Length: 348
Image (cartoon, rainbow, N blue to C red; front, side):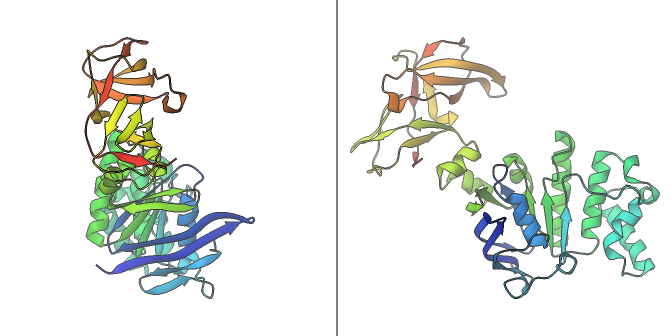
């Protein structure tokens, strides 16, 4: 696959504050990247810098083998051949649907504009007679499709989406994500979309990038990142499990849930263990080591959150999540054991 966009050592400073630092990223033709991270970490700034709305302080952006941004070259947004879909769709309320879609292709002949509108409406399963209506006359899902049509009309090499599904109810959201994914694959258009929801990344994206404080922490397939997070920040943001304080010994680990034996020598600076709910079991005959603080009901059974009953302050924890078919009460003391698995240790 050919590389559509390549970003090398991109940095952005606004008001003498570093917003993005040394961003390196590349996408192949038709590849979709989900960009996740806490609010204020720089996700939208990265989209706006790629689009040309914000000028980078350093670094290079190459789109389809053409340098669109560097210390010497800065192409304006309208010359970058990049489409963008905003969270609120940003449709022009005073323009008809046809006028909204053709806004970015006004240089085309009238015949070509009409043909493009007809093709996109058909492609996005919108009725042809919708072209004469105005945005306020459409449902949220229809407005989203029109925003997609407008972004696709100029046939961009890259599509940028800033939380495009957040204003849509969950049932329609999944349907739209699957439709748009199939459409982008068919048209071989690469895309980068910002979201706070990791489930959207699994549905929509080929790759995931986790950001924090202006840095890209990890870029890979969503499944690999969730299976092998490279830092506690990544695992914590994606809520991959609970955190168990540990003390590393020559034979293994000491935790508030008991000792864990390791077949290898762990690094002494590791001080927390990532525990997923499936790696916890209840020992009805064991000495209680946690107290139930929260009870919920899910498809997986009862969902419990417990705190430690440990006397050692450095091993204490407030929240440990697990699922179980057994019914307990708030403040019940029970015994949890850690089952043997590939342990994931981190430094915090």
